[in-house]
Image (tube, rainbow, N blue to C red; front, side):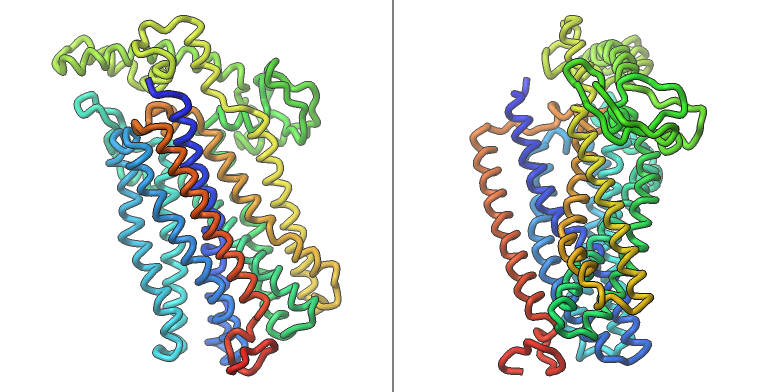
Amino acid sequence: MISEQLVDLSRLQFAATAMYHFLFVPLTIGMVWLLVIMESVYVMTGNVIWKDMTRFWGKLFGINFALGVTTGITLEFQFGTNWAYYSHYVGDIFGAPLAIEGLMAFFLESTFIGLFFFGWDRLTKTQHLMVTLLMAVGTNLSALWILIANGWMQSPVGAEFSYQTMRMEMTDFWAIVFNPDAQAKFVHTVSAGYLTGAMFVLSISSWYLLKGRDVEFAKRSFRVAAAFGLASAMSVIVLGDESGYTVGEAQQTKMAAIEAMWETEPAPAGLKLIAGINEAQSKNDWEVEVPWVMGLIGTRSISKQIPGIHEIKAKNRERIINGIVAVTALETLRKNRGDAVAKQVFERTKADLGFGLLLKKYVVEVRQATPEIIEKAVNDTVPRVAPMFWSFRLMVGLGFAMLLLFGLAFWSTLRSECKARPWLLRSALWMLPAPWIACELGWFVAEYGRQPWTIYGVLPTHLSVSTLSVGSLYGSLAGFVGFYTVLLVVEIYLMVKFARMGPGSLGTGRYQSEPAHA
């Protein structure tokens, strides 16, 4: 059996690299469309200040993109180095969208990013705008295919296990592409990226306005960011609701953990705003609840119940017991592919194969599992509730706070009073980290809430790892964290440096803080 320490270190290493990488991704996704908007206004009006805005914010975008690519490359390699059995078990399915992302999206994105920076004097205004637009399309296509792959891990449709190859096999490519979980995750994630880009531009523009620097440049940037951010904040909330609905359909365990719903409540269930979670006794000591809201969000009805954790555990217990039969039949088929009786038993029980495999964390032969071991596996099927509950609420709270900020910012631009409201500008500056915190919390909820599964309901995490030494994992984890921390420091240093210089870094002679050679 794989040691628990090996599994935990493998998870920690992948989580650390993924979370570092996702510090760069949302800004790339969001800023690219702001560049499209700014350059479109330049092409339509011919006003050179909009060209300068595109070039300046594009410079910050380029710094972030370069470091985002650097941190992202290692992630795909980790599937082979740290998660070898996972790659073997589902590689033909999971690898397809990742390969398409590399061929279709990443090369498109990288090519047009080069033309964006070096084509200003070589292309016409319209041609360069098309380059910027295609760069944005490539960025979003890249996110789409990655999230299709991740969505399949959350809701494995269009595939089934084959006892002949002992792997998951793709049965319907288009079911994977149009997986409702993947599509909801994509629109919610890119909207969060748009919100991040808008907050970045709004915050830095607010700093210029507070300092009285490059006011016309900053006011235009502030207006674009306020309008784009308001639309993005509303989209994040609306699409987050849709994402919550798909979670309620495909991952009822995650939904119950997010809501700290221990018992199945009469429909429609209430939404818990806060609660005193007592995991030791599997209950809430106290809670503040809004009636009906959770039922409407999670089921889109007033009559359908959302199962509680205790009911889910009871169902999972039955599936684990049924899974023992499936694993036993599969082991018989491995020895004799022609055993008709074993094949018949396996076909009848294979939907619960993954639940039977949960027992291999504790015993080699699942038939030897005692009631106590089965109960341990049942408890494993539900992630810890408190981290899920509070992470989700902090994420949602930040989302509504940003909606309020962008609403006030947009209102101030309509009244042409953004510069006359220092408290609003200071609020925008202090809110700069908010979208990154919310994005990291969102990914934590999505990925931690999937445990104990790598592929939800199909492949347990403890069976997915490579056979590595604990020492090598400690070494590589330290190396990744150290290297990524250096990259993060470089990113922050360069971003602060050029943000402080402002549009004067372009050397046009039209702005403050121009370089000495300008």
